[in-house]
Length: 220
Ligand SMILES: Nc1ncnc2c1ncn2[C@@H]1O[C@H](COP(=O)(O)OP(=O)(O)OP(=O)(O)O)[C@@H](O)[C@H]1O
Ligand SMILES: [Mg+2]
Image (cartoon, rainbow, N blue to C red; front, side, top):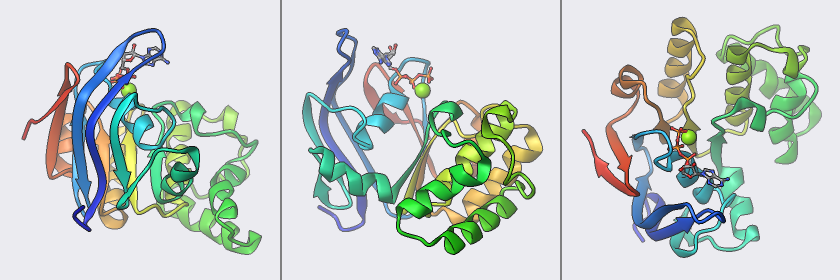
């Protein structure tokens, strides 16, 4: 496999247990330093594709290679989850600690950082996303947009090698979306963004794929 190919999916077939078939023979690649947009109608399978890449769902056939290695077992995906940052479509799926600082520190602590290092990462990440002063706030009492930003912060605090961002700016106001975009452009060289926001895509990605009827094609 090309050394620069971070994600390589071949012939992916997947159906949910209720029989809802989402993919039959899907191919997809993401190269290092590539910024891709993924769009398509509701229910097309965009979120499902991200969950398959992270090993949260298992394909019925086809291959998923990430960082040059075939990923099949739960153990295979532990490394994927450490090195690929998934922003869930629903912030509540991402946030599970009582306070903002605990949620953001969780990943770095899990990676073996000390409490002092984790505290510094929390401070820095909050600063970059305009979340300074939010550290002690109770996560479940935040507004939808605030939760979105904290969810982003938890992903960014892991300093992943590539990001899978599922509708990252949904619920964010214009100024906050812009701040988020500035952050991505400055610090995240490789990502896939699922979005219906054409303006965001035109500024944030090099190429947009359209997912319809289980097939990906380049839109522009
Ligand atoms: N847990 C599930 N069980 C059964 N079917 C599911 C499940 N999750 C999703 N689906 C179905 O799989 C298809 C793809 O869903 P998915 O959430 O991946 O779409 P999406 O492109 O992300 O849509 P949206 O733009 O609305 O977020 C849809 O038809 C959906 O109803
Ligand atoms: Mg979705």
